[in-house]
Length: 117
Image (cartoon, rainbow, N blue to C red):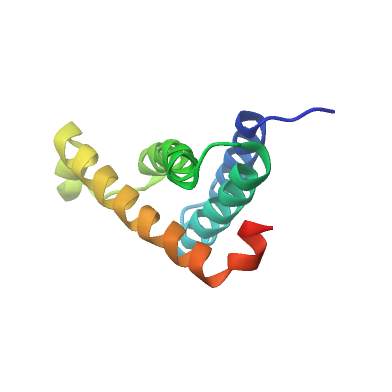
């Protein structure tokens, strides 16, 4: 069976969503987030022929999709209604993508052999 980067990332996203479905917890979120990013980096290495910066951008695009799912699932008390406002959500998404970009660099630096091979 031939798989593509998109197929692999769709599968990773479904796995991450399944981990979060039983009930939201910060532990489950952090585990799903890190596992998703690491898996996406490996999929980019295996499936994409683009240079490193383009691979990183492709991974970040999928991290954004993961985050959009998470935001819809996070239970917020009524007094935090403002966290669901579009401009707050987009600002939070930008912060998360910046953190993810740094995490990608850190994972790459710690696992050079795995990602260069």
